[in-house]
Image 1 (cartoon, rainbow over the protein chains, first blue to last red):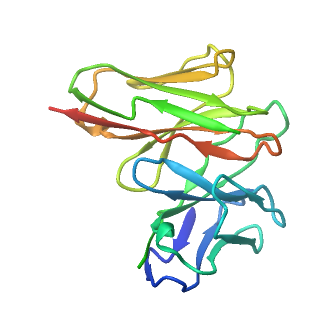
Image 2: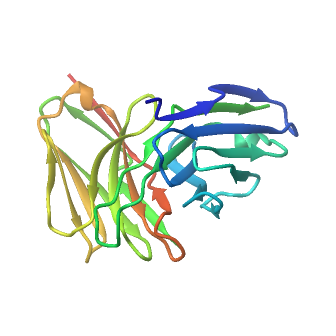
Length: 118
Length: 113
């Protein structure tokens, strides 16, 4: 199994350019997530999707849009990149617990995309 | 507002020392607390805690949750240089969705020989 894959691994953009980060998982997980990681700030949640067809804002959604294309894929779009969006972006997925009192499950992370905006 | 706080933010110890990492949280509709280890790449899962007072153990690592006081600790005994990493605490649950998972800033642990 490939797990969670992300493309591209590295990207350099100029201010104002747009791009889409791709994420796919082959584990039949319902929930998918986009995080950004900056030095000393842990992982900050940008958007998440609890199931196909639904998306919700996380802690830092401004400047981003997402699409949950199908159960496998969850993309993150920067419409007009800014230097403040220079970061490492991680995608993650998770399968839900089975019922309210069942055990819950950890997230599986992709390898990350290192984005630099000049 | 949902929040996860970790302390200390960084720590330097010698091999063989025991360390305790702290995580406190404020989240509505709490569902679980998770610990991850991050070396140079993506985080890897360590523990998931859902019930107070039940210790989870894996080798030299252990963790426990206190849902009344809203905190968790991660203990590492007999530290080794391979334990050097950032340790991340995450909490699941929110006012609107159980699926929201937010992270703390992490504790950077350096173990020196």
